[in-house]
Length: 336
Ligand code: KG4
Ligand code: ZN
Image (spheres, rainbow, N blue to C red):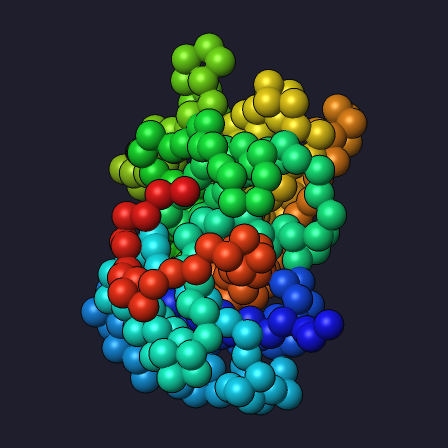
């Protein structure tokens, strides 16, 4: 029985990443080239700059992934790529590169939804999971509660009605003049503050709703900051960061465990960049433990954007024969 080697590419936002995995879950390499330093001075990702940077980096990152894995192109069984959701120009760089590799080597092409990739970061940690699974996907662009009833089978049962959780972290960090990207900086600063210092709203929405809303919370932080400035009072940024983080985490955790109960999921998965947040991980672990729910969380490096998670999702598509045609195109608004 021959090992199956999958090369995956991820270029949906501001990381150029390539990974080689053996048989779906064995990571031989996972190269992540971050553009954060390029975008930092603009305070956020500049799409046109991201595309150009991906184009500059992609061949070198792919070669590095192959070298580190100790394989060459001829040994690959398939090539996978994120084709959405994301920035169209950024996605196109990965899609074009993957199609060229698939065509040149005459191997199958696999198109992966970026959110599906985030979900599968959990299968890199724990390949044997009992369905149905309840997954909280929290990233810069999404805040979704997803019921997974089998490989490739997803139902979104809750979503944000306005800002994504990561987006709220980034905007609040900008208000506090912490820098970019804000999530990790708030994560770092919050333990120095008092999370009950600033009363902030929590949007639970209608009774029983599994949807989220973070724009009211974000505005409350911005208003608090402005009011303090007008009064000439200094704001304790650590207190404000801690109070904000607690408000986000309370709602995320509450709805996640409720959803697990409602859909009969004995296991909860955490995914997306915000899943790297320590307060979220600890609070969710505590609540799951109290209720006898099993919790799986990827290590932080597999929570933020990377190609290993794309390769893992692709492997299960490979097993199902769910291949993409060479006409595959980027779909910036792709849904789960
Ligand atoms: O999944 P991801 O890397 O890219 C998208 O698919 O959007 O998520 C990026 C988001 C950013 O908003 C970033 O601030 C947030 O994840 N993030 C965090 C942490 N690390 C990254 N938010 C809170 N705490 C963290 N430790
Ligand atoms: Zn992502």
